[in-house]
Image (cartoon, rainbow, N blue to C red; front, top):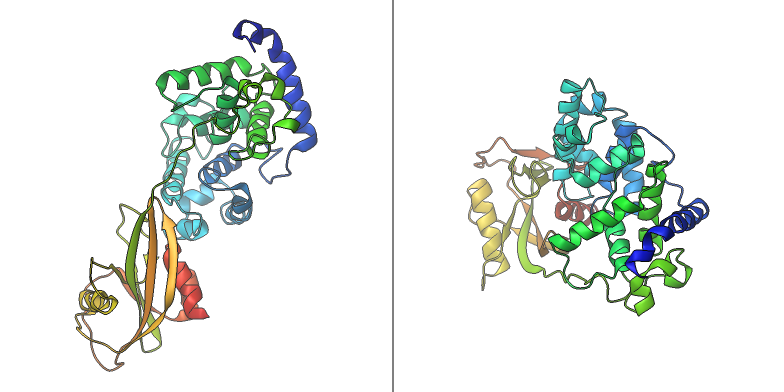
Length: 358
């Protein structure tokens, strides 16, 4: 489609997109509402997480924290527990910080200002644009992964997306936005990207915008955008389920860094050439000051996070109930198996809990 002819086709593109959206949109719990709080929570949850996964988390979250005031007063551990299993926990911590700031500075109401929103913890241009357009009806574009992929295909931008291409995408979206019902239009773009203009095997023959798509016309829809290959670092670790007097030892991660403030079982990364038993002894010596202990292999669990794929070799260690062991940390507690559900655990440790509960 020649660029000079594009402007006169914008109104047709909008009509086709909205007609498709009215008949094809999914029924989602955060749709058809204008509550800035609920829209904010849903948009943060949907970053890095699928809609199918988010729905039950969102529903439980709104029940536990119905508004910003309730959220701002909740302890961090309760917030992390509500987020448990979705990963990228910094999102939950930023939501909590943001709620406190909004309660303090804006009386519990998210500000109707793009610039003010950007100053809040964890809210970037995409989330601010979503809140402004969907909750407040303001003319702001949204550039999530689905919209970006859709736009890159329409414009047929090949290769890596650099600053110049980013500006081209943003300009295109700004020209595309209608004057009214901008929130609905943005949701339609996101929905089309999610359901039809998929990252793999896009459904171009049923796409309402195929007549406008340069990639489809050139037969490049599978090659555009350039896919990113994720390289994972393979790790092996030994994890100890240590039991004494009917209680299991768990420990809280540091308050900063990866998976901050989440709970886990004691574990140790296996050194190159090291046997599992040697790594396990390092765990026991570090945590309790003992060198040897009767142990039993429970099984292996695997999980992935950020750029790592981890194989956890799980060992059960039963301690002498009458002996006093060195612990030396207020971030360690002994809990009964039935009490484990109270604590927000890392994904790997959650898999271990399933293993020990059988």
